[in-house]
Image (cartoon, rainbow, N blue to C red; front, side, top):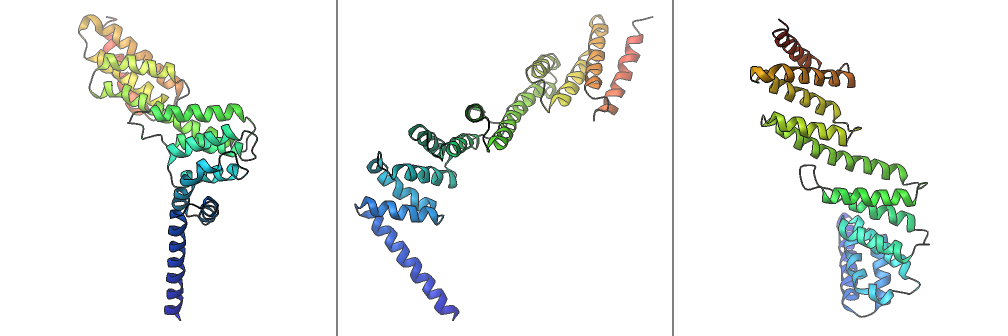
Length: 264
């Protein structure tokens, strides 16, 4: 019985593939549209794409075009071809602004661009583009059902950019270029006041000021120790129970001890 079922499945698959190849090669655009729709509804998006690509020009301006271009856009999205999906969804919205699918398409188009965002350590041009596309959607559809997801995607993309900037600033501390670290970390905190990396930035700014102070020549040490002390105050003012509290307190004790030398 199992052999019969397997044989039938192979037969169905063969017939299906044969039908697909036959339609793919002929000139009947109606047959291509019908089979592309069938493939789309069956989740065979890559096969549907090949058929849609052959008939887009023929269907422009026709009644079936709206549905076809929506399915075509979805196929690119479902197969994770996000550059093409973003472009197709935007074209759909532009061509059919009054479509009942326009809002969904606008969101998926923006989301497609957000999906192109690489890891934070790489160039973030696509991340910025994704944020811009999502923000445009949020501005246009402030009451959309997709708004929570759009906001969350925007937050994640923004956080990725912030992490890159923070890691670049922190990099000066890593290579012991403490003067540059102070400037870069100061700029980071000013530019991104609500960032989740603020506590880390304040600590590394404090440590940079501390390292610069304790390794200074006597003529500059007092001033730099006070700068480091202020940096400590900024850290604990932001979070009195900072995860860096033990280390920060030990550093402060050294600062206070060294400052006493200048009060005698």
